[in-house]
Each structure stands twice: as C-alpha cells, then as structure tokens.
Length: 114
Image (cartoon, rainbow, N blue to C red; front, side):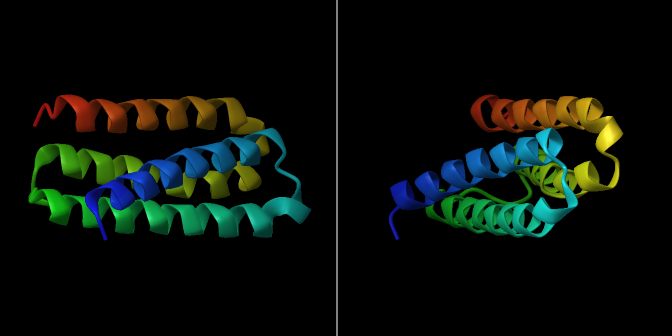
C-alpha cells in the first residue's frame, strides 16, 4: 500500500477513536457499551497497524522518542472509553485526559521533540 493510504487510515482511525470515546462519555448507557467498545477496539487496531505501516514506509525507528510518546497516548485513549462505562461520574476528568493525550500525540508527531 502507498504511504498516503497508511496516513489516511491512521488519521481516520484516530479521529473515529476519539469521537467514539467522547460518545462513551456523553451517553454511557449499558446497552450501548458493546457497540461502542467494539468500534473503539477496531479503531484502535486500525490506528496502530496503519501507524506502524507508515513508520515502515518512511523508514523511522520504533525506538524514536516521539513514537513511544504516541504509543503511550494511543494506549491511554484506547483504554479510556471502557472507563467511561465503569465510572460515568468521572466523564469530565476522562474527557480532559483524552484531550491531553490527543494533544500530546499530535505535538509529538509534528515537533518530534525526542
């Protein structure tokens, strides 16, 4: 696949992952849990597979600091939607964490501070 396809899938997956995570914060009804968790899981897999494909196409090393920061942010965002269903009273706190993790991932990829 071309580099552009990996980039498209990575960004689309990240946007959808964050969107459905926020949906979990807004409406943490138990009957929606299975669908939202399945979608966020699929999006998380798409993000990581496309991200590693993009790394391979561009020739970056996985040991680069900014890549590790993005992996940590990905793990945090991927896991936080499940927490919204377990503790809906902390949705505001989880929203803030999600925003900080997304901002850190974007910062790491564009500025590559490490």
